[in-house]
Length: 187
Image (tube, rainbow, N blue to C red; front, side, top):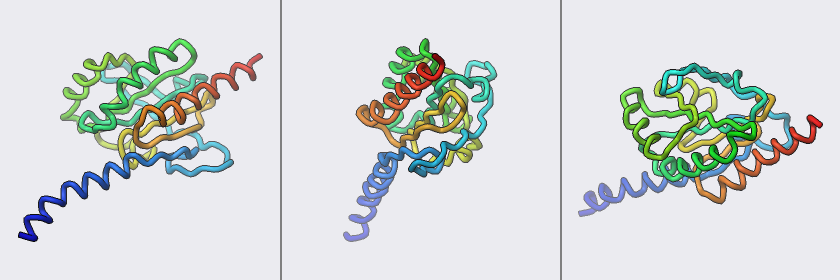
């Protein structure tokens, strides 16, 4: 009886632990999530081919604010985040902002990822990092994970997990701040 109870309870405990870890938010300036008034760390380089076959690199997006989203098709928080990211992109793409989406599904899951993107009307560039090299460079601890990269290529913000309020507070507000600062500095 006890063994069956613990076997039945184990998935709940594991899922709760993963969920708590994924809901944690970090606003640090570096991929590891450090914070404070330290100088922003340069974003690790990213280059690849989008799921629709176009070459893309983070260096090629310099002078734009970039929101990088690390996600998987099977992640519940990622499924919640995607419609907000699509709306955000539609609103900000003509203001000097780019979304660079990093799908972290294995190469065998690309078909499901493409279907998920189409279902959500995503039109921003998406690369697949099924082998994990970009995830390791950004020290991804869970999904979804968002980074804001400023116009000079430095990490300006980070969020692990998703809620609409946190997205507005940590990502949208930081993007607005960077756009306003850049607009003021270029006058």
